[in-house]
Length: 253
Image 1 (cartoon, rainbow, N blue to C red):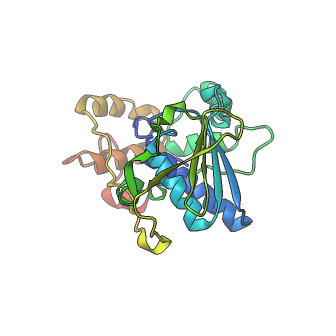
Image 2 (image 1 turned 45 degrees about the vertical axis):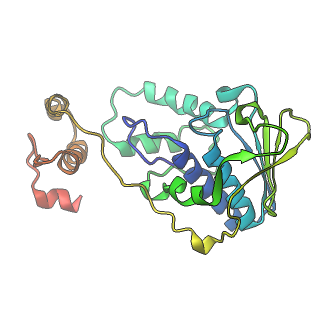
Image 3 (image 1 turned 180 degrees about the horizontal axis):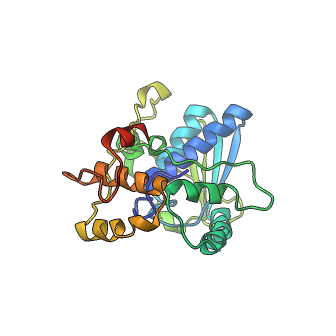
């Protein structure tokens, strides 16, 4: 799932949680499960932080699922998503030109010789502002008697439906419980999770001029897509440029 343009560095914990949540719900709709194991790298800004812990604790209790989150030592190269990036990256490099965002999705979906049963979609509405909703139910930092909680030292985190949260510094089952819930009285109905305010990255006039200088080499579909992008993201821009398209044409696209 993709929620932003490739020119935007917007992948954060909220987007990671949104992807995990959608995937878990899709799996539960197909076949309910009681235990889920998550593997990820230890990137603090995305996968290994207190907000993701809040989400896992919430999901475990609300959906009665035990979650084991494992952080393999080998990091990024271990994740299957990085191998997928390499597969469709090779396909993209062989193309002389890509004119629209739809072409990216088509290449990604068809890049495997033996496709996985997955699909690609670009839908910003799937991405929610989890931090604002989850934080009030948890302490500022997990606590435990006689020791300090240091997140980056742990290899595994376990969440149980009864609200118990445990950590382990090794990959053997050597778990210790800690307290993180501030208010455990939480239900699905209480959470009104809204999408973050959508904003487009600013487009500089020089960049727009450079792109429009290439219009003569683009097909009509690509020119239409760019016109819509300019019109929606640049105040005062009519979105037309060197094109014969009208406002009616753009609204019907």
